[in-house]
Image (cartoon, rainbow, N blue to C red; front, side, top):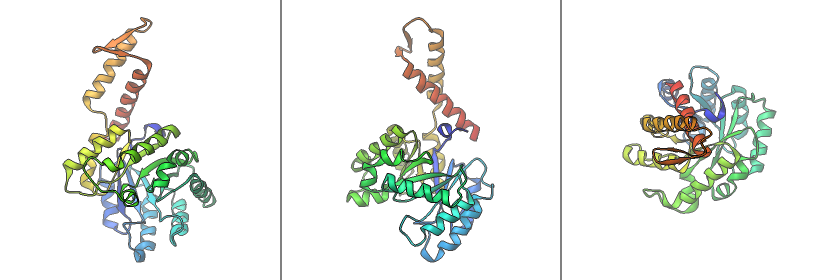
Length: 288
């Protein structure tokens, strides 16, 4: 499947120190997994978590799921060992927290090549600071190896001295800037996590907001968030039906100069959007 069509509706963080959680992940209807070596793992558990994550990523037991490993950040005592081990395991991606500049992307890509990461192993950069938000375009475009930007909204709220409020008004500028940077560079972009795992209504509202802003999907912290996230970030039946009807009208009116569908004028850009909806729907159905 091409990078453009790879569904990343739901990407779930899993603590790599928890072997039961890693086993459960094989059964979840999630598009992607982030096997975490950073925040979810205590310092004394990091060596064992590293071994677990690398064994899982190289096992081939996760089916269609995109399997990535989140290493500890640049400058930490665990980073180099994490990155070297992850490169040897060859996951679909290596997620690096707090990537702050294009220069850091270059350093990470050079290290991945030095450690022998296979070509299939892409870099996912987490955007978690004001500086990274303002440099999102340069970060996203820094290397062909970079495939995804991931919002780290918890750290960003802290750095902004903002507050978590319904509707995320304090974050909207930052969210939009990162989406703009990702789209200009042609890479995927994932929304940050929703912290209240019991508030599914609020979670679904935030998923819809992220979808409307242009995100490809959302990073998750609980298996109960997977199904509603998949639903929101997939084209609805109505959207698929509308896209098919629009394309039929376009093809029937070829050469007529003006095409309308359900009272709407149809131009090339609408045709491209409709084709994208159908391609995304097909890619999602292939996962079922």
